[in-house]
Length: 145
Ligand SMILES: [Zn+2]
Image (cartoon, rainbow, N blue to C red; front, side, top):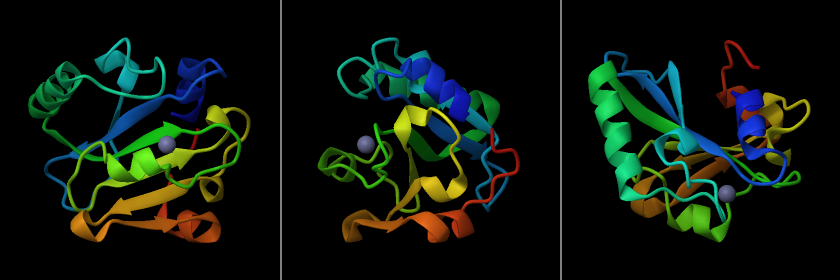
């Protein structure tokens, strides 16, 4: 996933994806990834943004494959994995428990679990963010590549 995010960003811009888990599992375990630019070819132009059509493609895909969106991932330049003001104000899916992962350095080079920012959406209570050792402890990566 990290390599794919880097490639799609071309080292110049941010990229991102939705993280999907089987509907049948109560504990979210990411089983599939849908990249923003596959849902909307213009998604990465001028900052990450998705048109309504991208969401309808996403929901159809989820229904067909019996998956649900449990989180999203996007890249930031440099080593800043805090959410931007825009990130905080615009959860990709505004559902309590949604997790937003932020990957540094436009996903280039070696990225370890402790390098990412993990942000848990709590609805009206905002977000809970974890970094470094805390992020690593919360993120189980079966195949980190
Ligand atoms: Zn961001």
